[in-house]
Image 1: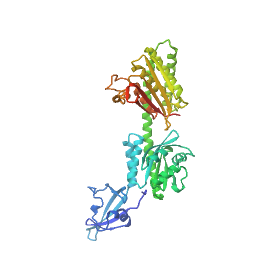
Image 2: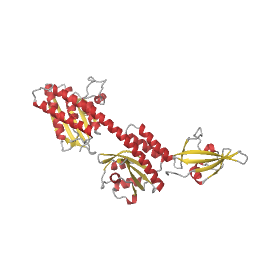
Image 3: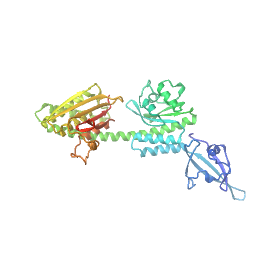
Amino acid sequence: MEIIPADGHCIVADGTIVWCDPVFNEWFSHRGIGPGTRLSQLFPATREHKPGTIYEDLDRLGKKRFFAMECTPTIGQNGEKVSDSIRIRKITLQRVLTDISRLSTQAKTSKELFEKVLWLLRDTTHYLAFAGFIARDGRVELVASKGWTEKLKSYISQQDIAPDSPSLTGRTAYYRRQVVMAMRDYDLSPAVKSAIIKLGGEYVVVTPLLDRERLVGVLTVINDKALTTADSEALQSICGQIASALNLKLQEEAAMAKADEAVLLANIAARTMKDVIYLPKADKRSADNALEICKAVEILMRSLNENAPVEYLPLKDALDFAISGAKELAEAAHKRLNVRVIGQDNNKVSPLLKFAVYEALKNSVQYSTSESVDVTIRALKERSGMQRIEISDNGPGIPDEYKSEAFRPDKTNMKNPGGMGLYIVKKIARIYGGRVWAEDRVHGDYRKGATIVVTIPVR
């Protein structure tokens, strides 16, 4: 896919191609188009042939390509039209760049944008496989791929941006320059090398996505042959367009995330301060908890306003805060909350996690029909690196048909449609790239209690 490819030419008389040059022949001979063929067979799917029309076609390997056509009549000595001189320009690269810009306005997320862009490249280029990475917090994360095997994706799903990163992706992101490597010279990871060779790849090309010096991601392509100069120039142009579109989408997502965080903090502050107001005023712990709430909200609001990094806290501190506050609420409701914690470690988590656990514990207290509420909190680190928190109680449980609805702000089918506690838990988990869901404490019998599972990244 050249940046400025050569034009193809043919001469048409009475609607029949009577001559064509080597470029034209190279483009269309696999379709049997040449001298003696009717011009109407060149782009039969196009209803109207007029100036400005873009014609779509498939090459020998079934990849899409796009053309523009210009027609100049040849006039004889007596002023009569003798033939038409047809000039055909290949505009595939220009069309791809335009489509990438268009996709940036249609995609709702950066991940969706990358998915759509890779589909476009798969349909219009001859590379064997593609992988799109987004740069976040000193790492590159795989968000989209085409032609990649599941095993290969698992090897490269996340990589540190570092000069000694175990992948070309991480190193390319660090040095910010394109790397082209033959697989015979690849010596970073035998498992990755083997997986790429099984795809038929002989060359891997890794290109940083830079928009006005900002690293937003990396595009990796696998090819079965070395890139020509024209291929390399076209790929650089495509990557520049992807970087621009991706940066715009990431900025939109960042602005939306800030708005979501602000709304979430307002909800957390309002709910927790309301809880403190209803606690016995003489209790010193109530005042201490209120102060902690104000401090946490102040830190988080400063991070929103100043783009300062959020200060992560030890998991133990987050759980202690949540348990202490929930026990006070239980006492105010004339209940006793017994909490057993299993598997605490020294991981650091978002300060919002303390409010997520607090809301889950408060939910257990609120809906328990017993004066004694027994809760077990299990903390463990998943193989993916995420912190997993399981909060199990001995309450009435959540029937299967309500397990998803319990996390919605409006629960039209449940007895308590206005409860916001678990919705807050879900928002906290998702705002930091985590998940939350409900399970039965005893598998298959919801009446023996519920387990709320929260996963959240750690530091």
